[in-house]
Length: 517
Image 1 (cartoon, one colour):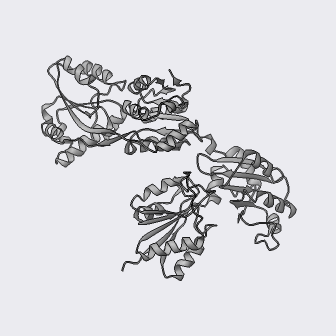
Image 2: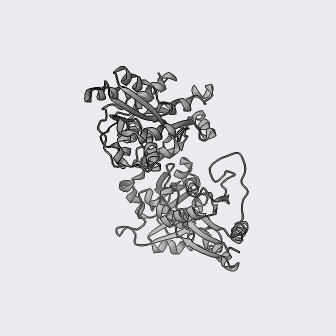
Image 3: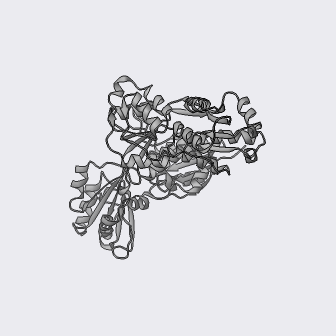
């Protein structure tokens, strides 16, 4: 019988990018994932094949932040039994814990339980909140000008107990930096105990809420007034407290707050496989991203037309790709037919957009023509200027819903045109509940659109009442997308000057205005 194994994995303090490579590898191999409240839900997407078991709670809310049912409060004993049951089933189990498993993570208790029951285990350390959160707040825990040592304590310890495990008097005497985990509730007692033990009331303090995430907020003050300041700011758990002279460095070293989209919520309507670049760029700028894919990219219904034209590609004068998707699907079909780039010998290639040109370059080919403006009309004008269209044969490899403008213009100019379906787009939708709630409460700052189909599939399902409540800035990738927005009664806050993902992000950052036309 196959014997299971449990891997204790540190998920890091919040930012999904702080997961270690080994932790990622284990999630991808896992058969079950047992995770806590503070684990970023994005990490669960690394293990689509695994059974997911949530074993944490926060004030009756689910670990994924959803509301509507109360999550049972799992005791450590119950969590241990879940791990044991899964391991006895022969599964590779990832026990995914916020921060580092062995630093206030009760990982030692779980490992001891597994040893007791002869279950094999490993530990993959994580970036501890005690290190990662201050770093994102611009606070180095040690600096030879201010502190040469750091002490980590748990804020759950009650400093007023007669038999307190934390010796506050010694802590106040040894100096250095003091980092308190999960201590918002006990912050008044902690500050009082330190001051009573002789710590100066002028000692700098920082309290960091939701560290490393777009929601991060930092309140700074002194030992004498930090409680008042955190109450005024309504700071809640999860929060980490840093006490010591190094907090003064934050004034110059704070970097995370300078990200241009920090704390902003941006909806991405692009198809999920194609959205990764946009999502990554937005997160790099500090945005909170809500993925709401409105279209799904699929292969053509019938491969015979594209197969036929690939086999006789040498008969064409021009091949036209109007999107990166068209390139990817066309070349994938070529490969399946045993063909390679040599079939383009003697054939010129025209593309719309830098993203399409880049996709072509990745296949080892350079485009012969790309218009200055990334539209069908601009491409036609460029083709007309570059070559005598009359009598030439064109192959258009496009989406099933591509507008007929380019084909009609070429045919009117005397070209012979064959248009094939390289791929299909289908309407789909993301989490409507989150989107509708975000619009209703005015919590969405921007909505990005990368094509006319994303516009249509975003607005069509929206209830009329919600259409009237949209206050988000709408960001368009180009004129065709903008025209689609206008048909629905909206104008974009900004249209990308360069009709690429990079241009879209730049337009979002520098845009203003928008709303109804």
